[in-house]
Image (cartoon, rainbow, N blue to C red; front, side, top):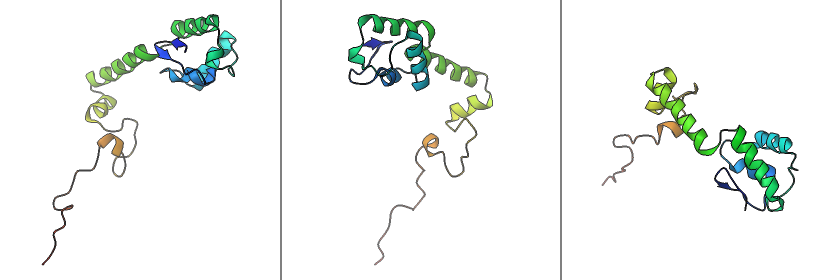
Length: 127
């Protein structure tokens, strides 16, 4: 099992897909990395030599923000928006959609489950 940027890559997957298990690397970035290191994207992870794994590790850790560093950067960017109290920062802190989506009928992911209405759920039997 190859370990790159603190993530164990699955052995049976193709390298092109296995690299996407690292936070911050999608399919296009994965293909660029493999093109740069001249490794066949169709190879499986368990078929990689130690030298190829070392090349991938060097390429990823040297040129990209991934995993913990990227998570810290995103969190600090959001904290900065909250600190300067800009529109996006306020939306983040209140827990509403940030990118202009409507909130009248949707946005349940952000707002959470609907609050229960008074007398709505308990059905009393009439005698």
